[in-house]
Length: 234
Image (cartoon, rainbow, N blue to C red; front, side, top):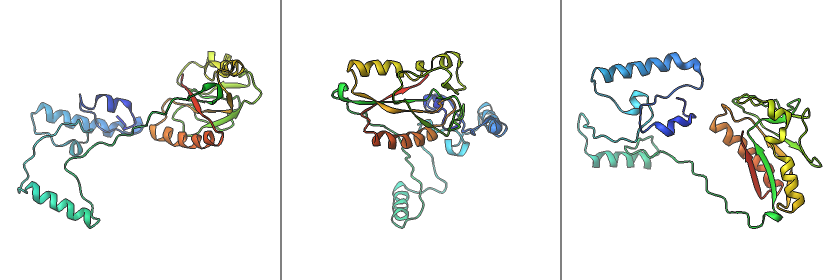
């Protein structure tokens, strides 16, 4: 599996998952490595570390005897000296990094809040002016909805390749709920709706690209003094 595949984090502690390429083009190489590892298991051969074998670490630590032997004290001092001298070194106790996102504080008064819509459902003007890809997106767009009560069929559509587009094309508001939020705006349930909505496609899009696009969109949300975002999937 590619490192972007959510299955890696879900199952890496339960099974051996080998590191794969970004597309099926690398499958020939990936399968060969997996087959060689499978042979070692069937033959009862000693298995090397996750890094040496090529699979994702499973969080299992095993005692290893060095040949020739080097005491832990000597290894620790050696790493410290390398660190102090700016030389590369490798820890014996790697800690996987965690990309934790702090939970945002609740909006105190929605009736005074500016709310924006961001979607990974691929709703765009019919000519797709930003040329957003239907899958594995690397682009996003923002579209002005000032004065619009709803998104009209034939004016907006979805370019998302991960679901049947018929209903969304017939009524784009099922993905971008402009009509419902306009009603909330009139009822005073929210202060106002941000004049733009932001759109990309989620299917096949890598976590790295999604994070980059989010950071770019956030700049515009801050400029618009947006208090809260409704993130609409499909």
